[in-house]
Length: 332
Image (cartoon, rainbow, N blue to C red; front, side, top):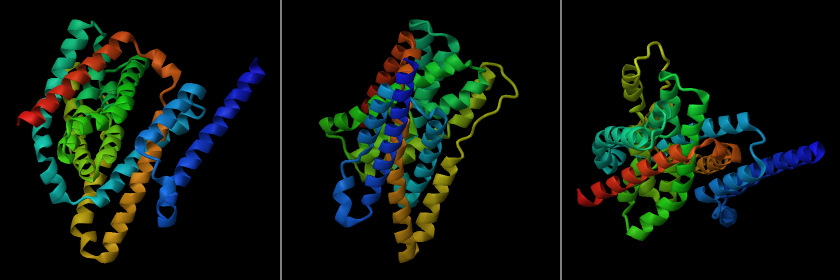
């Protein structure tokens, strides 16, 4: 019994490494025009699906490595995307979403409290973590707020699992819904940035929908993510905690720096434009690999840790923010 289990775990490690290498190799072939067709089918949803399928079958063979890769590779990829964006164009295309950010963040937190605490009776910390993750940027917001409210590991796991499950579904269904509704690139980018939780799924969905959608979604989402700082400060007042460390998403500032460098320096030189385009293309492909590692984090243990009430709160809150954002886009 133990021998067969070890064999299964060993096989899982081999499959895990093989999938990561194959995905990376196929994406690398995209840099060569004659082999471009080999990488065309390796899209963000495909990479996420492979990661999900692997984790549900084999579990997570290298949990520490997988966690670090999904975290840091995502941050580096987002910064790299900045080298393909123009500051003025990004701000112009995303200004409507930025104006809606304040209302949606506060509104999501209030509605989350009503659904979680009043309707479903989810415990206070878990409910607040789910609401925070939905309001701003998923796992990053939960990781920032958790220490402030002194959340237990079990509460963090439930909140992260809930948000992660919904993120996985979002990457698959949002582009399909956007096409079915005939949404423009700008409309979809704004909708994805506000209604999808984690930056990874927002960028992945935007990339799947189109170039302009990617720029709008990334700009609005990272602007929204800056709300982690005031949220953590307000949270410390609400929960009356002192001396808690606030986790600041510094990579967002590097993303802004990359946009500024691309707009005001690299764009004035042919070699600079070429360098910016190359970095941006590497970042896009790295993001696809990142989604494989993120998908490989959703094991059966994670699914079992998420209670029905917590998941229902996440789903109901997600539906509310998705529909209200659509209403805002079409009515205003």
